[in-house]
Structures are given as structure tokens and as C-alpha cells.
Amino acid sequence: MKTKKSFFMGSFRTLIWIVAAAVVMVGCVTPQQQAKGPEAPAAGPTSGAMAKMNVETGQAKVFGVQAYDRDDRTEVKILMDRPAASHRVMRRGTHEFVVVLDGVETRLGGGSIPTASRKLIAVKATSAPAGTFTLTGRLLDPVGRLEAHAVGKDLVVNVFPAAPSAMSTPRVSLAGPRSGSAQGWPETAGRPSRNMLNARPAPPDDGVMGYKRHYRGKPISLDLQNADIQNVLRLLADISGMNIVLEPDVSGKVTIKVENVPWDQVLDMVLMMNRLGKEEIGGVIRIARQEKLKEEWKEREERIKAQQELLRAQKDLGELQTVYLQVNYADPESIAAKIGEIKSEDGKVSVDQRTNLILYTDYPARIAEASGILERLDRPTRQVLIEARIVQINSNVSKDLGIDWGFSLTKTTDHSVSTDFAVNHPVTATSSASMTIGRLVGSTLWNLDLRLSAAETAGQGKVIAAPRVLTMNHVKATISQGTQIPYQEKTGEGNTSVSFKDATLELQVTPHITPDGRVRLQLQAKQDSPNTSITGGSGEPAIDTRKIDTELLVDDGATVVIGGIIKEEDSRDESRTPGVHRIPILGSLFKSESVRKDKSELLIFINPKIVDLSDQRTGAEL
Image (tube, rainbow, N blue to C red; front, side, top):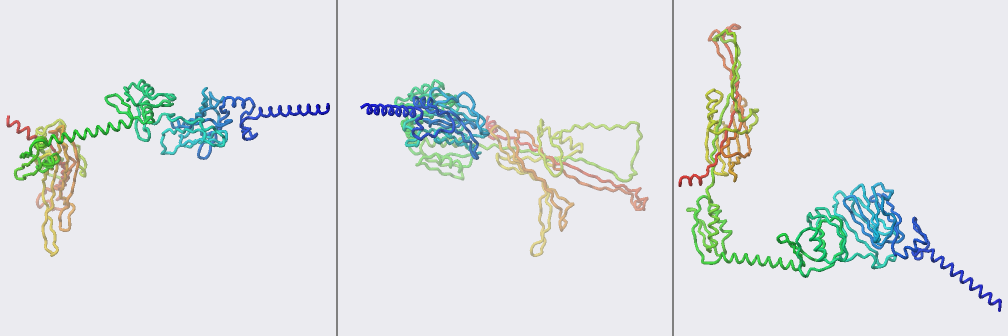
């Protein structure tokens, strides 16, 4: 009996030791080790105290951050003892990215974290008491695509560089635990709410939901959860200072978290999430359901169409009448075409070319409208009086060769040369291969005639022609002066015929009167002159051509100068004593030769003046 009792006591003690050992082993193994075995992470504490804390709080622990440079990306790894409830990855600006983890604890916050990456300039971690861990990284290159995925217990973020043509729109990624995953995350943990909004400021060129719009509102920061949309809109009205009116059926909940985003962009996002629309009337923003706004816009379009139909019907009231519209200056066909655009379906338009009359049959309101069109279009076309002065200025250079007996010598003790020339050239002389255009500033055409007359009297130049031509607005005027050079041509039958080629100075001017009373001139000047130094097979001289084509704007009554047409002529004169000049050697004493070089420049002065026939007729009637 004693032996049996001792056996039971020993067995009971053994059972107690086994239970105690099991309790100790269970207390030293973490929940993750119970699910996956004794394998521990490469780094980080695995003490029983940390496991006890995680079991009590239910939050993951972040105990390290690593970064490595790969071939095409930068890999950032956040070391944890279990997966986070949810994570978000986004871009901030062009060179920064942000990783936000929910439901985690860490002691890394408050400073920079050194890494092995050379592309990653700085890494900073911050944490909030609510269990939010934020990791901010800045790269040398612009940030492009972001990818985040869980690898075991850790979170790996791949940061790809931006392509040259990549947009700078921030990318926002919301991710939560997947149902049925290997980690055994709960299905509802970390699931984003229906109206959850978490974004960074978009560039000025980006809009909402794909359409472009420029937001210029004041940047604001909001953090609201499950807030009533009416209160949110009232808050935006207070922040922006705008007047916002809400329809009675505007309702909904909004969860929003934004930082430094324009308030008008936030307003558009809030309205779009709740299928609301807005319209601005007189500085007041009215917010209503999109369906209601569409119905109102449709009703307005129908109302406008009805008003237009009513106006057209009012124009077609009364009896058909026939009137005769007299056209004085305009083309009757063009006026009739304009009237045909406004006539009613019962109206008829015809033109009598002989009398320039338009026969128009229509309703009285249509006829009154056609009369107004005729009054505005049938006006006399203004004309331009173009006066030109074609002047040739000579500059003679002579040089005498030999001896002339007919000379006299006066002995003087004082030799002086007096030069008192007052020169006012509007154009600078250029080479003979070009033409130039200038303006005659501060001088009227009458003053120009006085100067040219004085120069002609002094033998410094002469006026070749002074044509005047009156042309209508937008109509080309041509002034031509010169000679015709005969040319002999042989026909196919062997006969000889004579043809003429023009060697003229031709000036073509097309005036355009501007609404402010100036004249826009299209000038074409051409100078063709015979060149006897170059001849054809039958001795015909060649034609030297100089041409200018330009367009300029001048004031009414101003003078334009075309110059640079330079002509040089060489002449040789010989004076001798008959008979004696033939004696060898001594004959040179009784003859002399002179070579004369004549250099002349052709100047063309053009003076346009606007002639308004309506003003002249009004003055005559008075």
C-alpha cells in the first residue's frame, strides 16, 4: 500500500514538472513562431517582452529601414515583425516619395536614417501616437513609378526613375491586407473607407478625373473623417470667402485628408465623389445634384430654342411686300447674297444689273433688316491720290588729259575755296545693284518741289517726271516711263521681223486705307535700262534690270522715297588743231583729251493722300 502511494506521488510530481515546462515554452515563443516555426528574422529583437507587447496591442513593430541601389530602381525595405494593417505609397513633388503605414509602432521617428543607397539622398521617419508611421525619401533623380509589396513580414518599395516624357502628376496608392493571404491578415483590417481621399497637391496643369483645369485657389490642409458634406462645404466657403448655396437634397459623408491642396480642387473632388455639380451665377456658387443640373441645362436650351423660334415667328408676321433697293456704290450681287442669308422661307431676292436695283419680297420686319444691311454696306469707297516725283541727281567727275592753249593764269596771293552746301538727303546713296527706301521727314510735297527746283537750277539734278494718279482703295495704280528698244527676229520662213522690248521705269502702287486713317502701300518698282556694253548677235543691247517689292505703312500725306538706282556713263572728248595735230611727237602739243564720268542717282518720291468722296459731297451740299 505504501509502495502504491509512493508511485502515485511520483507520477503526480512528474506531471506537474511537464505542465510547468510547457507553460514556460509557450511564454517564450511568439505568435509568429507558433504559426511558422522557430525561424526568426535576420535582424531585430525577439524577446518575450516584445512578443507580449505585440499580443496586447495588436500592432506591428518597425525596427529598421534598408535601401539598396538596383540596376533600374532603388529598393527600400521596411523591416517589421509582422505585416502592417495597411500601407500607402505616393509621390511628393518631383524628387520625393512618401510611405505611410497604419497600425504600427516604432522608435525610429525623429531623425534621418543612414542607408547603403547612393541614389537616395535622405531618408526620414516620423511616427504619430495613433499608430501611423511615415517614411519620406528624397532621390537625386526625379521619381517615376512606385511599387510596394509585402515580402514575408517586411514591406518592399521599388522606386523607379521618371522617364523623360513622364508627367509630374502625383500617384496615390492605397493598399490593404488581402483576404486569404499567407500572412493571415483579417479581412476588414486596413480597408479604406468609401469616400477616403488622401492626396498631395497636383501640378497646375492637372485637373480632376482626367480633364484639364487650372486651380488657383488658396492651398489648404484638411483632415476629416466621416464628416457631413454640408459642414465640409460650409468650411470651404469660410476658407475661400466664396458664397456657396446648397440645394436641400445635398447630403453625404466625406472622409478627406489633404495637405496644401487648392481649395477649389478639393471642392471639385468632394463634389465628384458625391455625384454633385456646381454652377456660378453672379459670384455665388450653387451646388446641386448632377442630374438636377443636367435637367435644368436641358430646360434652358429648350427655352432658348423656343425664344429663337418666337423671334423668327415675329419677323414673319404681316403680309408679304415688295421693295426696290437702290445700290449706288457696292456690287448688287454681293448685297443680294447678304440679303439672301436673312430672308424668310417665303422671301425672294433678284437683281437688275442695268439699274443696280435689288427686288426684294418679304415680310416687313425682314425688309427693315435688309434695309439696314444695305445702308451699312452701300457706301462710297475712299480713294487715294498718289503723286510721284521722279528725279535724277547728277554728280560729275571730270579729269582733263593733255594741254589746252586756251587757258589763262591769274596770279594771286591768296587762294580760298568756299563750300556752303546745305544737304538734306532722305536716302543714302548705295551701290548700283540695290534699291533703298526712305522717308522724307518734316517736309510736305510743296517744300519738296521747291528743293528740287533749286537743285535743278544749280545743275545738280533734274525732275524727269511728276505723275499723279487717283485710284480707289485696294486697287493697283501703275506709273510707267521709258523707251522701247527694237529687236530683229527671224521667223521660221527666214523672214525678219522687228519686235520691241520695254526699257522703262515702272512703278506699281496698291493703297490700303486702314481704319485709323493711315495708308498701307504695296510698292513694286522696276528700272530697266539698255546696256550697250553687252550686245546680242545682231547688235541689240542687253537690258539691265533693278527691282524692288515691299510693303510699308505711312501716314496720310507723308512722302516715301525710293533710291539706290545709280547709273554711270563714261564719255571721252578730244579737242585739236586741224592739220598740226598730225605731226609726230609735236602734234600732241596741239590737241587735248578729256575723260568724263557721269554718275547719276534716280530718286522716286511717292506721296499718298486719302480722298473721301462722302466728305466732299457733304461740303458741296452745305
